[in-house]
Length: 224
Image 1 (cartoon, helix red, strand yellow):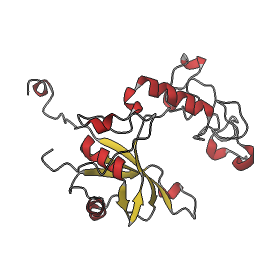
Image 2 (cartoon, helix red, strand yellow; image 1 turned 120 degrees about the vertical axis):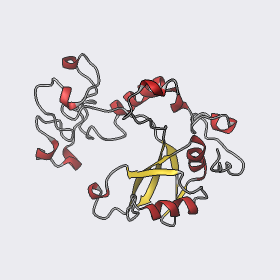
Image 3 (cartoon, rainbow, N blue to C red; image 1 turned 45 degrees about the horizontal axis):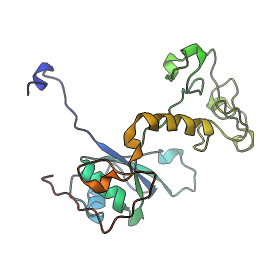
């Protein structure tokens, strides 16, 4: 209370949310439907109300025409419930979906497509702060925006970070992307763990070794 009283009457205190990535979820799932969320909780053996909200990692509208599954980000209200989902997966749309903890990833500027350059003192930055002289295409590396790109990116892509002509900047196998993600992981030590670390020693498993745990983690009740 002594801490909170220093804030204005209009201030809002948000509790921490635990974010996980649910893989290969049917696109037909209605992520903003409360009944759908409740059904996922029931099917996955979770208590009602533990899922705070869900959102697509990539909007279905931007998926390929014939694509039927994509990844879904789910926010939980506690580390224990998130860990239960990571260990046991989630049942969504009558499908068992694998789950993993969402890690921080390297972000590149959408104007220059770089993680940093001399004009910005080598520091990561957003497009609004970018001092590069012109737009750079993340697909082919040309001096234009991606929406104006005339290239066939299946054969004419070019990564300005790797100086490699076989992939665009957003390719997750890009060596520059992986390098900068590794730098983040070296800073944020929670990346070293498969689970959100709690007092439960089974959450202390390193991502360097795939854990083999007996049985299922106990689902916390509503009282913690």
